[in-house]
Image (cartoon, rainbow, N blue to C red; front, side, top):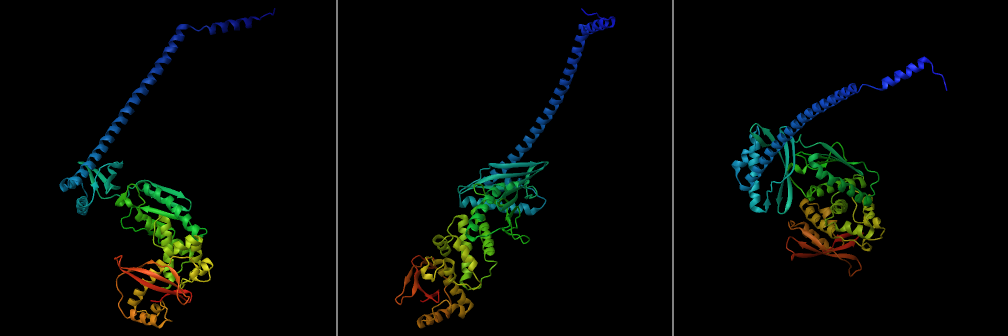
Length: 456
């Protein structure tokens, strides 16, 4: 057994004493800690209750403010339904009397519309945004079964909410849609339009460039802006920036924000730009066939984009029978004075009668051009449309040129290719004259010097 020194024994005794703390002291310390904890929890609970009360109060105030706005909109819509101008006018306010005049005109338009068609002023609020004393409300109306959205603006005065002139600074936060080759900049109100327009432009670019072989294109930029005076157009500062007026500044379709009217406008501008690029900014000389052919390609592209028939029969038949890339080849062959003989090179044929094409819209254009050349008294270009080798045809052309043209439009509805008695390829076209389906005229075209010329 070991020997412990005196200092070691004293250290062990001290350790044992310190380990045995007084229970009362220990209890008091625990109580002090508990009191502190309860105090802190109490303070936090009071603070939380105050914050919660303030939050609930603010929520209640905001709810009351929003409810007052909804009631104002309901009353305004009810006045429109009932035809009560007095009640409707009470909801309007502006520092300028012009606003009240505009709203009176709008009120009368609604009353007339209700008499002419089926109008449901549902009053359903599609979207509501409040920013302090101003508000923006999107309301639904159904016309002939089609749902529309109208965006109205309000201001909170001391006596309540009032309908005020549009505040386009309150159009929502700026957003962007970025797709393949397309970038659309818009604000919150125009989100339904932008999310429809952006992908559609992407698709159109793919369709157009597959046919025309566009190569590397700049990104097509689109700005959707709430501007009442703006027409859809390319920017004068950036040839690839398309400026689109927001449809919500007026009445916009709720089920189709990118409606057919906007689609045709955008498709026409894009098709024009792609054709201009493919033809290196060709300027066709009137009345050369290329003047029509360039526009016919644009019309065909628009039809492809919006999936509708644009009566571009000639280019449509070229794409269908020889592939859409033949349209691109045709464009690259175009010169300012080109005629229909460029189709031979576009498809690799020796002569037009060997090409399976639908000539109806070209011949319709030729007939309209004849009338225009008579009005202009342009004899040289007028006679160039005829087979003047034949004396009878030449005499008929002179007589027709000396007579004022009829104002009735001639539309070729049939243009079968056949071989004449002398072996010359010809088209015996049938044209409808004017609106009467029974009023028809047969017109003969012969293939002369590689192009179609009128022979009757």
